[in-house]
Amino acid sequence: MGRFSFTQEIAIDLGTANTIIIHNDKIVVDEPSVVALDRKTNKMIAVGEEARKMHGKTHENIRTVRPLRDGVIADFDAAQQMMRGMIKMAFPGNRWFSPHLKMVVCIPSGSTGVEERAVRDSSEKADAREVYLIQEPMAAAIGIGIDVEAAEGNMIVDIGGGTTEIAVISLGGIVSNKSIRIAGDDLTADVVEYMRRQHNIKVGERTAELIKINVGSALTSLDEPPEDYIVRGPNQMTALPMEVPVSYQEVAHCIEKSISKIEAAVLSALEQTPPELYADIVRNGIWMTGGGALLRGLNKRLTNKIGIPFHIADDPLHAVARGTGTALKNVDKFAFLKNGNEI
Image 1 (cartoon, rainbow, N blue to C red):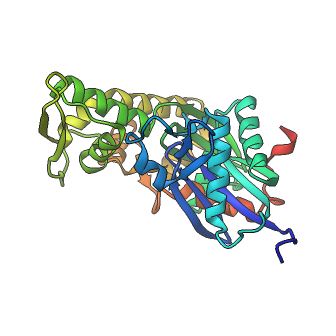
Image 2 (image 1 turned 180 degrees about the vertical axis):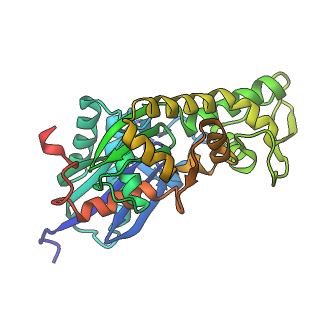
Image 3 (image 1 turned 90 degrees about the vertical axis):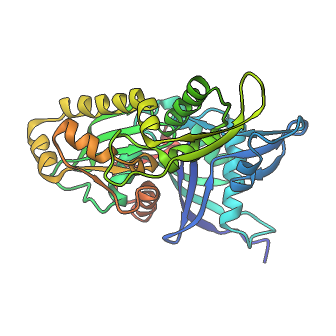
């Protein structure tokens, strides 16, 4: 039985923060994009959630790596090992052989040819025989049910971990787009720096992420404000333990610059939009996807700033993955998919 090979079709949302794999229309893997490696042998020790739990807690023989930075592969070997490990999670029963894979992988719309080749090469190293690439805003639009091939303008703002993807889509193509490397990771870094500077307390990435989730806000005034979040950590000067309450207003102030850059990028993409499509966008509103769409008050702030309604997708965290899964089923139909072998 183990001698036979067969082809399996999977869709991968290879994200800076999380990697999602879809097989047979189901999410079979949804794990943090982290891998733990042995420093001496460079062999994989853990991947996904198990590796994330090790992050910041390892000894000298183990290193934890986030292979993607700003939406693109920063560590080729770690990315390949992470993909291979997560594909094994998707097919846990196949102990004796690996299936031949046909996969669709989503990439940032601003990816260069070199970055696209890195994704293709990593996919092939993880046993992919056929690799197709789809741009994230296009996948997000498909994932929330927009007819991307219609003669109508739709705008997507996908705020992920490494990049914010803004695109106007019509007739199966991206008419205007803006890809900026300001996203969830930058908001987390803003919180780390603020806690250090304002409260004299050291916090790691994971704690800053929890602050952002619990009391993150794009507005200093919310109708339903969250309770202050208690942060515990060492004093920078004395190393003695501290306990600091953090309010949503504080977080809104510390991420202000990054949010303003996202606003400016949305306006820049709108400036490049042809008038007929602009009219469609004003009528349809702008759709927000990605983890950043869940930031309290962000859609309200953007609506007030730009004057066009911003709608949050029903399942913003999985919109790109679901769209990638739909693209996988329509590889022959969607002309905008890039065949990785031709890059």
